[in-house]
Structure formats: C-alpha cells, structure tokens
Length: 395
Length: 187
Image (cartoon, rainbow over all chains, first blue to last red; front, side, top):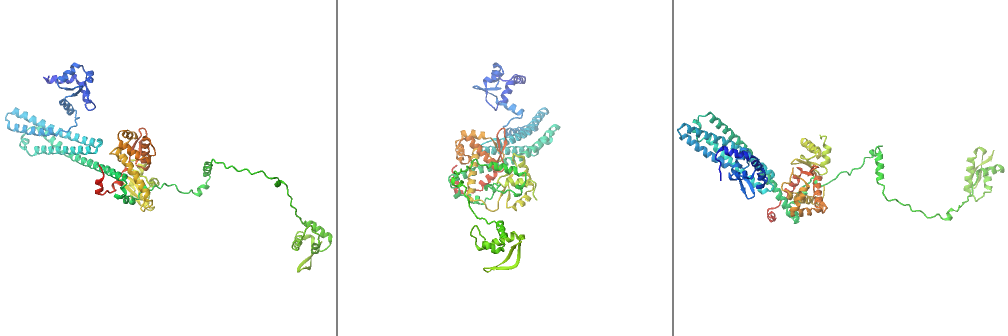
C-alpha cells in the first residue's frame, strides 16, 4: 500500500487522473462505475496505481472514489447533502481546547499558532453552520415534493426537524462561547483580524438562527399538509369500503349530508329549455334558417298515396237531370199578347209543370220587379182568396 | 350592480360547474378574479334569483337554498364521485389540486397494480367500455366536464387537476363515521 509522500505527489496524482475522477464524481449517484469503463479512460497501470494509493477503491467489477476524497470534493465544491452536526460539535470542543492552550502558553510564537488555530476554527464553524442550513432546507423541500410514500415522508421530515434542533443547539452553544464563557480570551486576544472574524461569526450565527426559524415553520407547514392529505386518503378509503358493503347509508350520516347539500353540482339542470322569440321568427334573416331546419326535418319516409281504383263506367256515363225552367221573358211576352191583367193571366197560364199558389205569387212579384218599367200598376186592387193584389197591365 | 362578466359566470355556474383560480383557460381565470373582486355584490345579485354564490378554497360554485332535486339522484351522483375519487387517489396519494398527470402513466400503473385494475373495472358503469385505455380516457373526460380537471398540454396529453377537487374532498370529509364502525373497517 502506497501513501503519498508529499503534497506535490498528491496534486500530481490528482492532475493526471483528473478525467477519470471527474467522470466518476459526476456519475457517483447515477450508477455504479465499472472497472471496464475506467480502463477506457486511463491506462490500466495508472488505474492500478490509483487503487494502490487508495484514491479509488475496487469492489469486484465496480469502482468508487475513496470516501475521504469524495467528501473533500463535495465539501470544496459545496455539493454535499449530508448534514453533519457532529463536526460542528467537535469543532467547539477543539476551540475550547485551543483557547485553553493559548491562555496557558507563555511563549509568543506558540501562542500565536494557537491563536491561528482558534481563528480557523471560528471561520469553519460559521461556514459550516450556514452550509448545513442550506442543505437542510433543500432536503426538506425535496422530500416533501418527491417522496411518494406518505409514511416515509412524515418520518423523514421529522428527522430533519431533529437535525434543525441540533443545529439550533450548536448555534446557541457557540454564541454562549463567544459572549459568556471564555470571555477572558476574547477580551484579551489582540488581533484586529481576530475581532473581525468573531464579528463575522456573530453575524453568521444570527443569520443562521433566523433561517432556522423559517425552516421550522416550513417543516410544520409540510407536516400539516401531509397529515391533512393522509386524513383525506384514509377517509376516502373508509367511505368507499362502507359503500361497497352497502352500509354507507345506514351507519353514517351520509343521508343527512346529502340531503343538506343544495349545491347545483348535484342537480344538473342543463338549460336550453326556452322558447323561441316570436318576433325573431318574423325577421327576414331567420327565414333561410327556417328553410334549412325544415329540410332537415324531411323524413326519409315518402308517403305513398294509394292509387285509387279505376273509375267505374257508370260514373262516366253522363247523367242528365231535367228541370223545368220558367222563363220570365217568355211569360212576359205571353202576358203582353194576352191582354189580361197579370194576376189573372198567371192564374190561367199553362205552366210546363205543376205550380203551387205560392210559386205563382212569387212569380207575380218577380215579374213585377223585373219588368217594372214595362208594366203599368193600377191603383185598383183585386182580391183572390184573401189576398189583395195590384192590377197590372202592360204599357 | 353586476360586472360585465356576470352572464358568463352565470352560464358556467348554473350548470353545476366550478370556476377555478388555477384553470388552464385564461378566460376562466379572469372570471375567477372578477368574482373575487365583486363577491358581495354578485352574491347579492344572484340571491335574488334564488342562487347562492358559494366560496371554496380557490374555487366558486352555486347552491340553491331550498331543495329541488330528488334525493335518489343526488345519492347516485355521490356514489359515482366516491368511486371515481377513490380510484384516482389509489393511483397516486398526492392526487389533488395542481397535480399533473397523463393517461399513459395510469395505464402503466394498471399493469403492476391489480387492485387499481379491479377498481377501474368496477367503474365500468360510468366508462362503458372494456378497454382500459378508453376507460381511463372516459374517466378523465368526466373529470374535465364537471370542471375538476383541465387539459393542460395538448401535445403531451397532460392534464392538471383544479382547485375544485377540494369540493369532493370536503364532501367526503363531512361524512362522519362513528368511532365503533371506524374500528371495524380493515386496514
């Protein structure tokens, strides 16, 4: 097993293996990287060297980047997703240790080195806390939006809430450290850079604290939403079960709920049952539409008129009806020729048919009204069977 | 005093449909905004023709103060919606307002989930078809027709569930199941 003997060697190694490492790093989540793939990227001898130096580990046909290097890459590139509160804890402990050493040490140089150590730890704490919070928020968001199983979602979110609390504790511990304990150290430490770092740390911790309040609200909100959703799910399942068992009406207040529900949703009154405006129908523009509508209504059924039977011969035979017509002109001429007065003449006239007394009287009146100009109406009146008549002579 | 959209609002709501704030149709979103701005005026207006303007969570609908339809029809309708909602929730737990899906996804799930398939078969009286893909399409059409879903993207055939789905959820939540019966229902 080889180890790196110098920084230069390490950096050189990383340099000539950069293609392979880039490939493997980028695909670290998508699939397990195979030995054959690696051989295509760099030569086999170099690959073996990497394995020897424990930059890459080999597991049968699969390869993976060594965990230390993986973490190194993730942290530097700020892509790690795991939130590690343990390191912050550790860092506080180390901080306290360094402070103690500083206070105990008398030698100037060594004192200075402790001071430097303290500074670097302070810087780290601030950075890591903020990074942790960013990662935490991102993880919470992802879990809520992508996790399909409700139970797992709830437990993951609860886990993140726990992490949030841990970070909170660390923040308060650090703040306590800066302001409460070790006050001696922080008052006497001389550096201007040092006070700058502590101030920055204070600001970062403040910011972190506020962010965590938001995170807490977010988690609570998500948990509530999930709980509500799963309650609905549960309810639907139960209602469906009861319905399938035909127990829904009897054993729940289903009927009451439905009876009380007056929403239009349940009463599909599709409108369109209105009459046409009669005024509109008189309009000229409507006429072609009416034509079209009537054409559509032409049913395909053609009513066949039954043809009647032949007309029988006897109907075709012309029948004549005879009626005797009394021609007033002819009667008048005969009257002129007779010299008698009208009434008498009519009484004795030879009619072509049987004429009753009423018909004769009617004829008398008819003739008078027809030929008034040609008759003279005397003032004398005759009488016949109780009927008075005027005496009429031709002119 | 009614808005200029009053006629459109009446058209849609009087058919028993919903106006959602997250509709895919720009026109409907405008109507939603109009109702929200003039809610009290419009309620006043419609109550005079015996229609109550109801407000849900990001959606509106009508209800009639006194009872008109027969109970039988309402129960049938409620049964139908319980079944349909149960099916979609079984397909995906997070089926709710804003949820997007395609018919193809459901079809794929049917192949692996036997219970889901049997639920779909159970819905045959509403889908009226043996073939699974046609049945799913029919169900989605029913959702769209009542205003619970919208076709969001014609190209990908993706649908979006609208806010009015909470109406059904609330309806089911309001059914109270007594404790002892609750315990009898298997997990």
